Length: 519
Image (cartoon, rainbow, N blue to C red; front, side, top):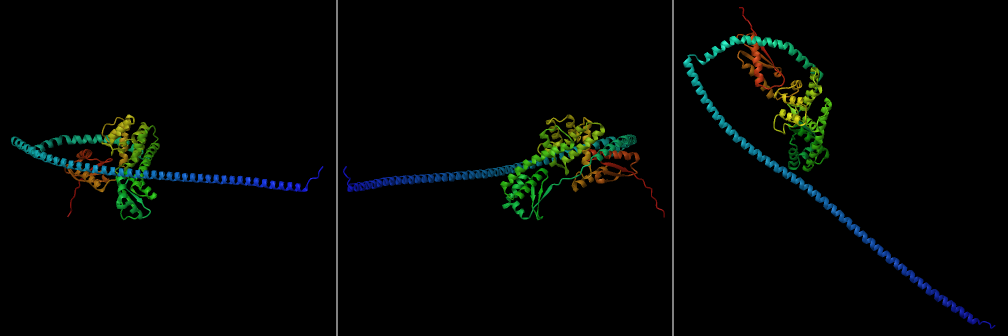
């Protein structure tokens, strides 16, 4: 076997190494190219992803900006719409006030024209009366010439005979019957009324026509008035209450004869002061909310009255009307408190008489129900009250009690009479009603004039705040029996010509004094 050549082996090894090295370079170069290509692909993909994220972020930002812009424009549009509605309401109010002013002016001119016509008609009637009196006087003169007796003498002759024949008998008969009736009726009636009044006694509180709102400081007066007085004008216009802002420290006075309006104005003003925002739009918002709250409060007043008296089965609308009586006054007396007091007295008196106590309380509570809306509907509170009671299906006894408690029609049941008595008791209690000094003096003067007009009366004095009339008669003209007739005549004349709460006691005094002087 031939021996291998070492040179060839070495050459083969070298060639193998070179080939391996070349192959390794080619493989590494291929791997490097693939790695670079993958890196470029990864970078390209990352760049594309970054651009996509960037575009998405930009689009999302643009959408959010667009949405915020749309929300802002919507809110701005709503604010503009609210402002426009407020301006429309104010314009409508101004137009209504202008129309009302025109209506008042037309009514005033119509009244002036009617007054002129009445004046002319009165003048014509006076002229006719003068002519009638002249003709009458001519006829009387003719009769006097024919009979030979003057008018005064004939009248004196007739009256003398009638007075002599009838005065003594009438006076004696009246005195006898009065004494018999007083012994029985006055005693029972007095005991019954005193017993009823002793069993029930409520506080007397008169309503005023002004409400004082306390302010934290005087700086708020300027905010209440507002720029160029727009706030105070808005308050007075929507509430119907006069705001009096003077030098009184930390106080504003609300003046109105309507207690409901005054209460709404008070709550509205106090809410505005707590809130701090005082401008026409806010005033209207608070006023509307206060009116809604006041309705719920009115219903609460009605329910409390029914609960206090133990009455049930009353229509919800009638309860609201009843609650409105809390904001109605009569001679300064709260009508709801007066009605509750009358209901209690009716129940007590009905119990003493053996009548239906619950029905009597119901009639007493609703006897003045018409006063709740008599300023909204034409007619007296009696007629309005009867219509309300019929509308809500109240018992016939309650309807008749409402209709007859001021004597407008005859009472058909004992309960109706009891309601009239309890109403007079409640109204005539000392301090229950207030009156102006002018009306008080005028009533006393009118009362004294009634007594002074009676023949034979020397002087009349009204005492006990007009509850008693003392009449001093001339003893030489009025005897003891005629004094009773004088008292009866004064009583009848007072009942015919005057209106007064409660009763008036007439006392006729006849005194004879014999006086001599020793020298």
